Every structure is written in structure tokens, then in C-alpha cells.
Length: 482
Image (cartoon, rainbow, N blue to C red; front, side):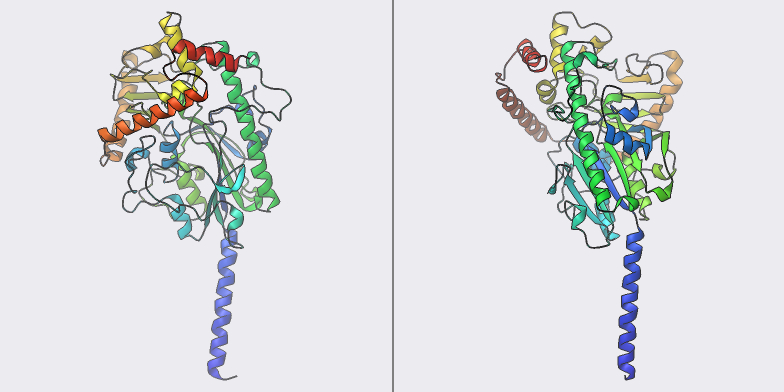
């Protein structure tokens, strides 16, 4: 064999060896799987709820690190998901209005987490739990396409690590019954959160919410079983969360605990030896940064999230609310885990302003209006019916978890209020310096779209679009109390 041939074969062997090492290194890198449940609050057995049966998630939690103080930073899906997938607060990328009409590209130099994983040769997928051949929910408030390589981690190349998302629709409204469970959840047996008045129609609605969670639990079980059958559990970090809080009045679309508090459970491969409960604050904006860190990928400086899953500490969690459908608003919040400050930047607006989504989907929205007109909505629930809101709301979450007693004007708590506002204002000065206000045309288009959604929904219910609150409530009672 001549010298030229020997050099050629040496180069081929060296190339093949390097390729082998690259594949081996790729296989050693952990897969990352996000299981995202739509509108899931902390109503799970592993979080202490005794009215719901969530055996799959409870077993998963027993093998995992469970975060007891995890929060979304936006109480509605599109804004929250835009933040989760970039690791940036939604107001900083003009992605806060739900759903943004005048969408723009992400700021120059800002990338989705999928792009960062792809640069590191990860396969990125996003599928529905019920059919992994179909693309899962995205709902991002910015322009872009081809965010994912596929819908299923099985579509990747052999040995290629993956970043996968699996979307579970439940417990998003419309709620569904857990028909696989022989014993339905009876409305009389549930414990309503103290932030709701005790009425039969609300009990029935709450019971259906819990049954929808049970449906989500079954999907989680199927996903984890599939991961195990594919032989991937030993090298996959699984992160389960809700995209924001529960879909009930004073919860979803509000910055109270019910709208922001979520479950966050992280299962590591056994070699990591990480199991237990953690009480530190963590925000969904931290999941992107932590996932990158766990995969050995450099975290861009522009990311707002902290690597809390890797031990970094977070002192505050923030909440952001802008227009949701036809309900224009402007609210910000900050919490240190004990106290929460809410800043209503449009205090002239009522809490119960017209919302086509809530009027169509929430029996509580109609019930409150009916009771209020009759003078029968008692304190503290009647506080939601005022014509104008206070500019600031301050709550002691330890002693007042329902957030009913506003301490913002209390002399004793002015130091706490001032400190929290200073921290919140500093963050907003940084994140909102390039924020673009929606045009009047966009707001009008959103209102028209919401009105069409409401009319169509009412007709499907067999109700005229101009039905009174009393007629709508009667329809809810006939549907839920049968």
C-alpha cells in the first residue's frame, strides 16, 4: 500500500473514530421532556388534594423533586407559553397580550429554546398526548415557523438526544368527565377553595374540573409508560407543569394565587439521586434556563430565568397581565413568597369587566352578577363587584391565602409595600423599555373576535346571544346539576 493510500485510510479511520465519539457523547447527554398540562393548578393528590385521584402523577412525584412554590408569570396560555419557550418575561418581548394581534418577530439576537437545543444537535419535538403524530399546542405571541423538528421523539436519528414537549389539553375548559373511573366525583363531597362562595353550581363545576384533572393524569401515565417502553427513562429528565393556574373565576387571567400557582415536578434519572419536596420559589421562566443548564448548553445572557433546578436561588416571582380577549387590562405583581403586591395600572377598570370568555365558560361569572343584582353576594366575595379597583393590593399569603384582606393602605405594612414596589418597578423599567402598546385597531379586532366567539358559543348552548344573566345561570344549573 503506497503512502497516499495509507494516509487516506488513516484519515477515514480517524474520521470514523471521531464520529463514534460524537455519537457516544450525544447519547450521554440527557434528553429533556416537558409535559405541559393546560390550565392545571395544584389540585393533585401529591399536593395534598384528597378529592381527586391522580395515581400516575402521584407515583411520578414520589420519584421526583416536587416544587411546592412554583408559579407561572402570566395567568393565560399564550403569554405564559411565549415566556416559557424563550426564558424571557412576556412583557419584554411584546408577547403579553392574549392572543397578540399585531405579532412581531422576537427581538434581534433572541432565540426560542428550541433553536438553542437544535444548535447543540438536539432533536426538538412537540406533540399531543392523545396522538403524538399531530403537532401539539404552541400558541406563541410572536412570529415564526418550523419551531420543531417533528412531533415525536421517535422521529429523531438513532442516538440523537431530544428536547420534547408533550401537550395535554386537560383540564382546560370545556371540562370532561373521567368516564374510566367507576366512581364519579360528587359535588357534595368536594372541598371548595375558600376564595369561592359555597353554591351547588360552583361545587358541580369544581367537581368537573377535578375529573378533567383525572383525565390529564391518565395521559401522564401513558406518556411515562411509552418513555419507559422505549428504554429512555434512564437518560431523560422529565419536567411536568401547568402552563398557568386553574380556569376559574378570580384565578385564570388574574394575578391572584389561583391564576399563577402551578405544580412543577421534575424527575431525574436514578443516577442523579434527586427526590423530595422543595419550598423555594421558582417561576416557569426558570424552566428554560434550567433545562439548558442540565443539557450542558450555554445560557444566553438575555434570558430572565434562573437555573433554580440547579440550585440557583430566586428571591421574587413576578406576574404580568395585559389584554385577554376583549378584556383590556394592565396589571403587574411581585411576591417574595410571604407577601404579594399587585399593581393595578388601570384602576378605573372593574374586576368584573365584560369578558366573553368568562361569560361563556365560567358559571361563577354569571352567578356573581345575578347574586350581586339581588343584593345576595356577601363579603368577602362582593369585593369583586366594585366599579373601580385600588391601585395597589398587598396580601399576606401566609395568613390570608385567599387574598381577601388588602393591606396596601395599612400603616404597619408600608415598608413591605415600598420594598416590593421598588423591586417590581426596577424589573419593569428594564423589561418594558421597548414595549409597544397595542393599536386601537388591534384592540377593536380582538373585541370583534371575542364577540363572534361568544355568539357562536351561546348558539351552541341553545341560548340567544342577548340572554340575561338569569337565563344563562339557569342553563348552567340545568347542565351541571342534572
